[in-house]
Amino acid sequence: MRVNYGRQTINADDIEAVLNVLKTPLLTQGPLLRTFENALSAETSFRYSIAANSATSCLYLSLKALSIKTGDLVWTSPITFAATANMAIMCGASIDFVDIQLDTYNMCPKNLKSKLETASQKDKLPNAIIFVSMCGNWSNLKEVSELCNEYDVKLIHDASHSLGAEPDTQSIDRQICDATVYSFHPVKMITTGEGGAVLTDKEYIYKSCELLRSHGITRKRDDLDKIDAEDWFYEQVDIGFNFRLTDIQAALGLSQLKKLRAFVQKRNEIARLYQDQLNADSYAYQKINKSCKSSYHLFSVLCKNKKYRDEAYKQLKSRGIGTNVHYIPIYRHPYYKQWQFEYGNFPASEEYYERCLSLPIFPGLDPNIISEVSMILNGI
Ligand SMILES: *Cc1c(COP(=O)(O)O)cnc(C)c1O
Image (cartoon, rainbow, N blue to C red; front, side, top):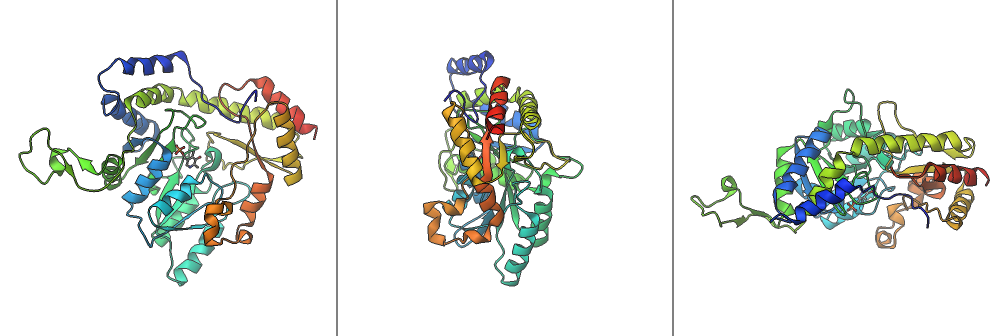
């Protein structure tokens, strides 16, 4: 492939930042992790930040912090990466899906409202909802959060696509979500190789995530049972994994974060170029509410139909241009067959899945590729 749908943007200063940590005494559990976390808090205006080794781990930590356990119920959108639903199952919860709105690609507030009404009558309300801002588009989050408030359901925002996306701060209060999760996988907005973070304004979520990120072990003197503990003393007060992010990764993240605004700008320009050059009759673009600025992690277009999409994929592939389908509805995966979800309950997700195609978008993308992709697609 000459080009993929996404890739990282690494410059000399990123490389230097990583090399510098390698010369310091602490490659992990050093000072850079805290510095990176503070920078993330500053960037996103959340009070607390916990970085970990992946967004998947961060989803797990957030659900655990919200006490999601066996017998609980979690709802999410079927159009997301499998990890969003997987982590609820890993906590012992059952999963169910709320269909998307075809034009925004995000969980549909109308569908959510009627599903909540029915669930409420049957006394089967979910304990938590995970909202996914597809491609970096926050549309519908406010409506979803209001419904969560009304029905007293916890809300996690899987913002893996959305670091640097701008909500209208007048209309979207960041405190509406219990936890917001970002991913730093190389195709995402910034990278640490692998990595992710939980951002929150809630102290109890922060404390719980921090504890569970590292075995459930604490060294904080205030949290220990033992009084007058020696410096070497620590206590395991809960049970967790090792989900830590290394200082090598934190250094890369810090360096990358400085460029986030420029990355978002560049991605918005690329999306604009596609929309100028593609034949408007053949493609529908994601609707982004006026109050949102998308981070454009993905540029997923809706083709006329499945046949057209499959042809577009094939022709671009034969020219060395990698595109992708984001995503296969989760309930279609063999692992999820055990719950016998009926595809017919998710008509918008099914249609989206048939028609969607993610075109190449990343800050270093050659504009000639955009013209080439548009020419090929307009010729179908
Ligand atoms: C990438 C992604 C994840 C998982 O992120 P990792 O950092 O790779 O664990 C979760 N949810 C969504 C929507 C994603 O796109």
